[in-house]
Length: 442
Image 1 (cartoon, rainbow, N blue to C red):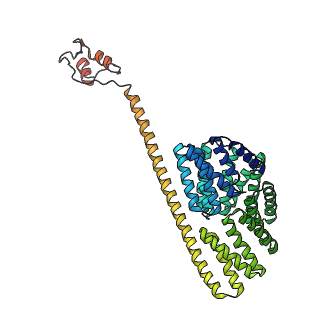
Image 2: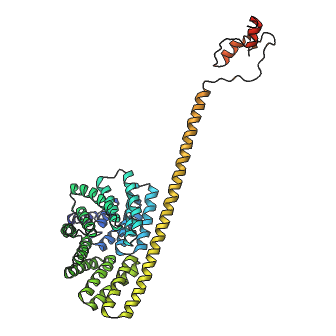
Image 3: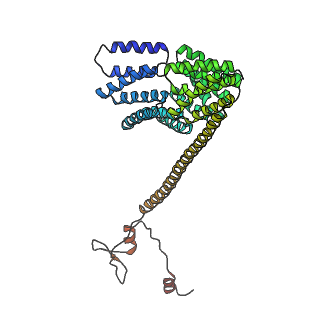
């Protein structure tokens, strides 16, 4: 959101504080908290907590759910994942009780971001897809759907499913270029740059990263600037320009430290430390990598811990401290195996759930088809029964002339009685015995 919009909300907030606290103040606090999420997370948290308190005291469940979702996002950005999950669960409970599909979609998006931050990309993708489904059911706008596709594309890119990622990004780019919102364009340009970087189309990657960085500077989006600067650092590393890479990483690190984003600090420390090693600044490399390693362990981000362990093993090998190099190499081996086992178990569990779900769906479809078939047979039977009248009970019939006595005591020819009491039509003919009696043998 542009700075002008934040200023507008702050001015509105000042006016509302002159009045008695109410819904309008709570709504504005939530909007401002969300607006400050990336540029000033500390201020965002203050506004969200105030909105939460007002919502509880004044009885605004929707605004309470919104403030809890924002607090979940703030804690996710800071690496406080248990707290982030707790806020999301509270928010989801409210939205489920209210049957608010848009709200549930928003929480699923935040849950996906939490899993993403922990390197659990498969789980993140599941929640992003669920968020998209809920948005579609609520007839969300093209911009909202584009946001879902953007996140899904990011997952595909991380999973190296480049064709799916590119298809998602092209869909998003078409919509966001039309709307012209700089924040959205900065996001999509940054991610397209990442995609081209992974595909080793480095000139295209640099072009898109620079576009994203320019927009984010104009917006004052410090987290976004830090992310793009880090991407440019990785790009120049791939180009073999370590001096430029280090400059970009350090600028990124300063911004992450300024906004208190520990995840960003941890990742960038690992990257910058590796460059220090390559440039021969081994003491600075040691200081930087150990800092990153400590944060990744605190945040329990196993993928990035492995990255830092790789960097520190290379560092001590470069320093000639083979004992420490061996120690960290052994730890790296253990963590890598644990990570692979954990991801394998997650994949097995996910496939098991998918198998059971599909099995139930197939069984339900077979049951449905059987019911359709049975229903059709029942309809045919009912239709047939509408054309049948049953002759039932004791029928008094004359032993000589074969007339039948009806319920009123009158005697009727058998043909008349059957015609009156059923839908049968009588036609006359002769049996072989009667023909012989009447006409003799032919």
